[in-house]
Length: 440
Image (cartoon, rainbow, N blue to C red; front, side):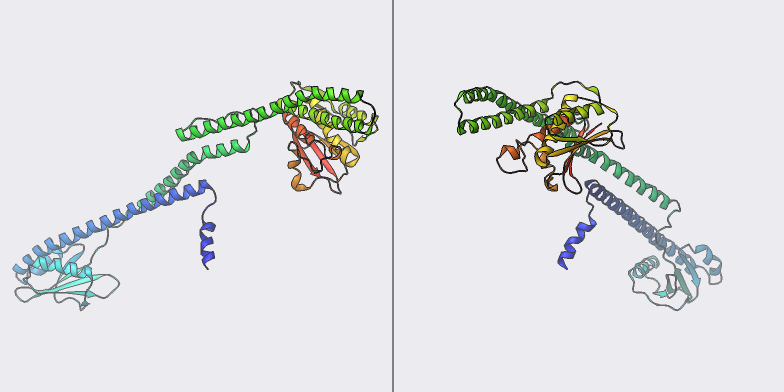
């Protein structure tokens, strides 16, 4: 029972900040408006009540004094003239009623007793019926009975147009609340969208620093944060490029010394280790260059000739690389960057599957989609995104022949971003991996 009660507010409370602020403001303003309306209603009721009782006391006092002084034969002519909307005089004992113990009855009785100045004994009774009626019974100086029939009035009736005004006011209240919430939440939505689209490698527009001082301060802080992140990433890549570049000279000297040494098993191991180090250094330099861009200009290429030339280069060295399907059309892109991307895909396919298939097609948006597919072991679905991170190797051994350096897909992803395209990895039905690059 307690857990159900605890979960109830979470089910009823809106999830979005926009809805919560709108609901809080709307409820608060509606409550304040309702409170003002209630106070106005009570004030109107009290004013009407005061007017009615004050008029009742003054008029009744005068009317009883006039009727008491007139001869009994002339009183009938003035009864209707002395009557008012909420009370009237009757010559006679009136109707049989029951004693009235209500506060309103006592209040009216007090006013009538004050009006007659306690000169005449008075009895207040309530007349049963649908209409709330009171009758005050008294006896004049000559012994004639007089009845005052009182019909207490409530608040004066509300004008017919007042509900329409109330509806218009509520609609205006909802509209103003929605507009205020929209103005307050919109900068937060823009900040969230800018954070989702944050990419230090792309020179996107800065977040607008216009608006209230708090919003402008948050926008300036966000723009400064993005610049710092881009600066840190640039420094990281520059350090990697500098280290990789400086390592080439000692590696070359070590390679020359190893080549001059006498043939032995240790020499073969040393040469093999130096080749692995040199490949790692070259991949580091390639990654740094891909991050900064090579300055290559876009050019128009024929897709069929371009894809065939890549496949032929691998086939000439005995690699199983084939082009499936009919390749048609042209693309406006950076040829060397695209060749490096596809080469990395093909190298991975040959390493893990022994063969690679290249397909080219156009999607529904008329963009060029180039896929490199294999029938290897693939990549677990939960690691597909991590596989494109720098230095990530699915094969956890330290053997460079099987694990590689972990930079191939990271380089391909950065180059694809420079081309304005997108890269996607997915496992093929029936086994194998597909690396897909889309050029828009």
